[in-house]
Length: 379
Image (cartoon, rainbow, N blue to C red; front, side, top):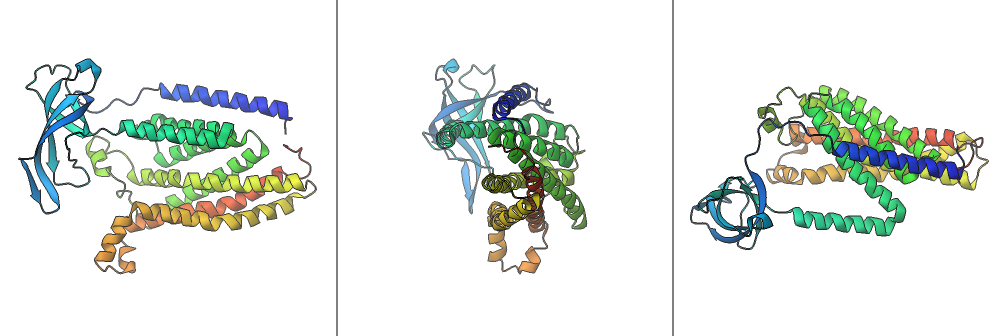
């Protein structure tokens, strides 16, 4: 491997390239929308509420909530308008406003008349969301130091990569599973090399992650077809079809989403094993590659049990209300495990767990080979 000065310089060059990629991705124009949204969203303070046209039907509400709102954008100088909030008896989509709330309303640029009735779109959440993100950034940088800054950099790069590259290309008809696999490999390289540096530890973690994710991708293609999981359990699939994207292969999108969801845990486990083997090799440089591989496998066995449970808990948390409904109806486990929704989550959990289990030996082999005695120490 390279001497320390050259390796540090290489890490700086790599960080600069990632920064340029971030900037380039940010300025990629989004795909043209099929239908242009009328007007522009503007934040507004709710001054008064009229619920006289809202009816209670059991647990849900139906009707039109009349609002009086004051626009918060300085451009409109606190203009007061009326707004409608339509409630359709759908708990997951309906919103209810009270005086003092901040709403997002749709305003036409030509709306200058005070008699214009605006449409209340939703609660305004960006302010607190930005405050939460700022708190996360400060905590990460304070606790992690320079490593935390690089981790935050990789976090931002991942968001931009998914929003500006993966989603537009899938909407243009690219194969979602293979595109996401390639994107996950790029993200893994960026995250691992930014945090661990361009070193043998980073190379071992990247190689092990890529091998484990590829194995999971192959198994996902096989078992989604065998178990006839069509991907329609993903949210808003039908809406996406009716929006003009009926050409999408939703099963392929489901496979890609499965790989994307498990890639973070796979990367984490690969880095743990690579770091462990690096420490063993550092304290005993005379160990041959076979002993280092055995050490990596022992580390992997200690970690993989909790990591697979982590995936199970994460996926179960996303569908806890569905499981509660089955329990309340007295549905037997064999019955609800065979349902489409639960079967899709079972496939996600097991394929992700397969990737996790396989990444351990892959990373151990790569790390054992890279850190064997003939190699020049990174330390």
